[in-house]
Length: 54
Image (tube, rainbow, N blue to C red; front, side):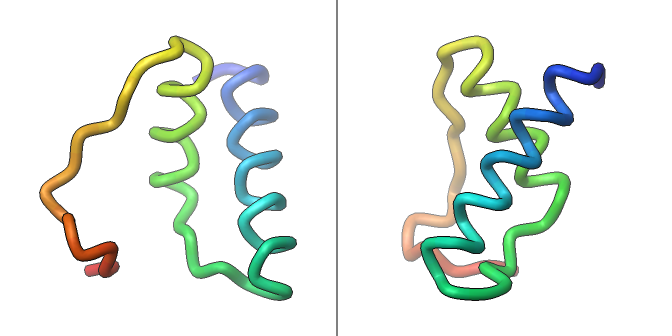
């Protein structure tokens, strides 16, 4: 991970928190994965189709 990934991850976490009006409950690992997908303009594949967190 580099500074760019960390910055995007922080922005994504802050945006999620802003949208929920508090702690969105998104973990840092999820934010790093989302940041890499965003930077690479790629998709993230998950088996959690119901939107739940484990």
